[in-house]
Length: 198
Image (cartoon, one colour):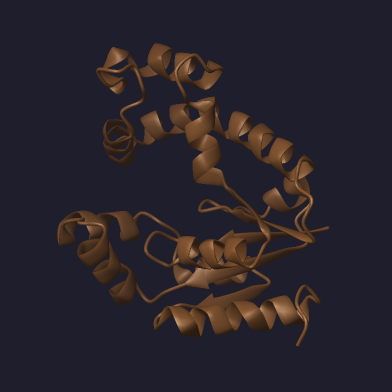
């Protein structure tokens, strides 16, 4: 079974790529979904976050107020470090569990914060970076995700650049155009890997 990471920044189109791969019948593990699972009420990470940040991080139903947490850690590097210490190990364990339970010819892991050390941790065979130009990513965040232009620019500026992402990936898929253009690139990679027939 091949294990392939899908990396890329906010607004680049990772979800479009992984949705297509899932439709093609491949197992897809989304690190963000795992993060949601490990921070559900009663889970150890949920309790640790409540202890670290106080009840302000909880909504009226006791679930994590993700927008509030994102705002706090975005503006406070020490809070981000605390959040990462609480969640990263548990997210990694959750991803490994899901890899172990997968049965398709390939497993794709959406890793927004991909780092080279993830290759060994998850036994990754290849990394595909889905990239979009900053202008395209900005317009997607504003038009489709209702970010203000100021907030979208700040989020994009806080992330790795396309050059940084490309430098640690095996293959780059540019997603500045249509979904069909992205899907054609994905099919090309799947064909190269022998995961689909030509």
